[in-house]
Length: 264
Image (cartoon, rainbow, N blue to C red):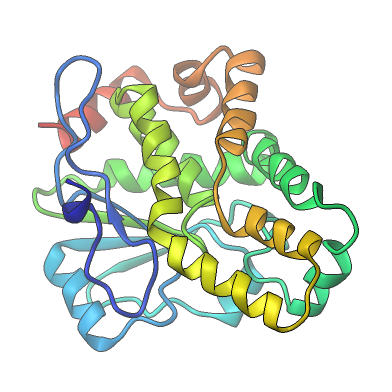
């Protein structure tokens, strides 16, 4: 099943389907409706055509303004672009930081990368900008009311802001929380080769083991990151369903409509 999940895109990483996941009440997420990806700046013309043919009609970009300017999306023809920055100014996940910036910040303490990411995930649940972005994401999902049309959502690496977007969308649809967590962690399998290359390159440049450990923490996902976010949702907001209603503003009708549109 994992093979169907990975989209054949040559100019991108971590492009994948959320179709086929079962819900707690025995339904299934429709295929070709929800697609999570990393950045779209390097899409080839063939990739763009493939996404158009696949049914993509909306491109939701969770990146910051800086990232958008540095690496603008190559939006396929006929696709509506929605710029919904999760962080107000900078990219907190450091997916777009320069080498010098990273070396200054992450060469001393080998826990600094991990701890930084825990903080990022807490912010994604509590920052007003993040809550507005995810609220508007659901508005885009609800507007996608024609059959055989997909919403694509992404950030730079397609794992953190995108991972939490998938968490919210799949939670709204009633997918089993353990499966949502597995989907989040699937990133590590898909990007394993790339992370190994990055680590090897850093070693060749003579970077310290501390720095490489921290880079791995920034470039991968961790159960700890997911749990840091969901712990806040569960302890401060009463759980995912309450968060969707009280913080992201979804009505019971919205949830019903989402399930009608995105579930078989």
